[in-house]
Image 1 (cartoon, rainbow, N blue to C red):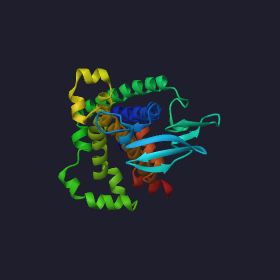
Image 2: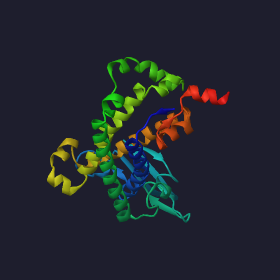
Image 3: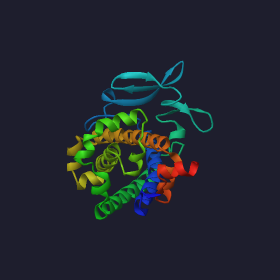
Image 4: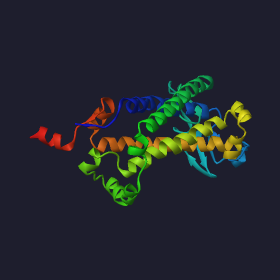
Length: 267
């Protein structure tokens, strides 16, 4: 058995597993109050980079517009059924928002509480990673790791995972993904979230300058949210295809069964 994940890392991981779905779904609830995105500091409906709206064309239809190009998204975005089966005008459907009904105030409460929990968890993780040298030993890729980037990328595309890769620590793609999420995507989504707060803008006006306006910050925050969703889907796929129960066990109790042991057990 290989001890892969210490208790602080496991706790931080599962707190994020709790926080991310709630943050995403409550964020969609907040987005539904004004289901459009803009660039700059103004919310001009004629200049929206993305919008979800309902139009009456004989029947109610949902129209999603991305960079001026329209798509009929009836039933999913713009117009969808609520929990009672009634057709409603709304950006994201009820099964993707928290709460499911149109309740902006409650969505904000959920979002802000778990956003601060997410930030606190991230700060504790980074402090632990620095003090325990987890950052330098396991997360940050070294030059010899980067030289194997092409081969590792090809192996992942072909779902070809060598046993040595899973027992010797994170491979180069994992290192790039984990460190990029913690120090890139995580920081970006927190800063853009803060830039949407009038109080934070008053205290730190440089935030708005950094992102080019509050509407730009909101748009980047939205894109970062979907980057988190994409990262999570790929992460779950990799966990499932490299040994679902073995990976889950290592993230629950810390111990990972090496392939050699699995082979012996099967004899």
